[in-house]
Length: 210
Length: 210
DNA sequence: TAGATTGTTAATCGATTAACAATC
DNA sequence: TAGATTGTTAATCGATTAACAATC
Image 1 (cartoon, protein in one colour):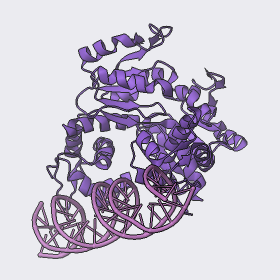
Image 2 (tube, rainbow over the protein chains, first blue to last red):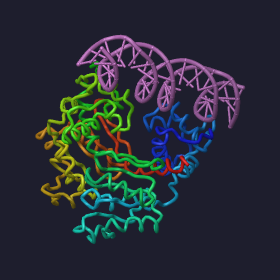
Image 3 (cartoon, each protein chain N blue to C red):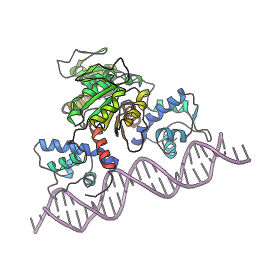
């Protein structure tokens, strides 16, 4: 294992995929998986797999490959998947409501502990077992639940404001579902989902490939 | 303008962002924007901007920059943003329902024309102005409405089946919100949203940066 | 005109892939 | 043992950045 300070972003993005795959393999009864197996399942080359896993605290064994249980557990450590990361959602519209109830988040270790909306008409409404809270409660909730991750699910024009409030509340990772980029200070990590842009990208690709 | 056959994927992914920015600038009353302005707004270098725009059918003017209206319109052409692309959603759970009603899609030219679910308990339910349809209607609807884009919003274990049915129905672009990758034949373009993996990536990045 | 900014070529950077000795 | 597969170094590829002549 190289003792690199930072994982390259492409590697970091692939690690969750290895983790999910390792779990699947383990559950499926496999004990060992070669770089060839992993590469094939994820659409990568064996070289990429071995390079990627050199960043992870795991050693393969020639002729056998990687122990899937160890692999899974190393990745869970790197990605802190054994911990639960309380998450907040900003925006209680269609998307915000759906995300707040989305089972996959809790299952992945990201239970949504609160939903916020700036519209006082919406505040107080029930979404699953949550009640929509006013924005003024954001900082207090984030501090008391030690929230590090926030999800932005507001219209484009409110996205920057939401990001600013999340940062002010001490959140250091943001998943942004609004269609605009948000600016954040150094040290805050933003991952943009930008679903509309994805659709445009898809059409552009279809247009462009012939 | 280079007459390249295919746009590199990184360029393709940035084009929607230029398009959105160009519209904002135009609406804001600007007529011209230099590569410096664009780069600054999007967090890119001026070199990248000029390289990117060399793939687009637009010419800048030294000392002035790019005409934002022309830029917007060229990008709209490349990304076919002037056309409306009827879209289907597979899965009528929380996420599927929210996506089906998500105003941003229709505003971006991707009106959701139908939602499908394989669960007969859910079929027939109303989601906004849509009624959930059974999977067996997928092919007919896609053919009759000339649907090219499908959104997968089903649990991980059903994602591949949904993808297969979309492909069989003639859809050639897929936005996948399930947490697993799906396999598709050559010629079908898939863009993975993988929100759970994004959250894991965020935590991994925070863990890893110190 | 002088100076700012383009378009494009060349240089750099970083990620992916190939190759192969080490080794189980 | 022989052969498969790792870990790692080197080569390649592609994207980003730098540089600068052309030009408005």
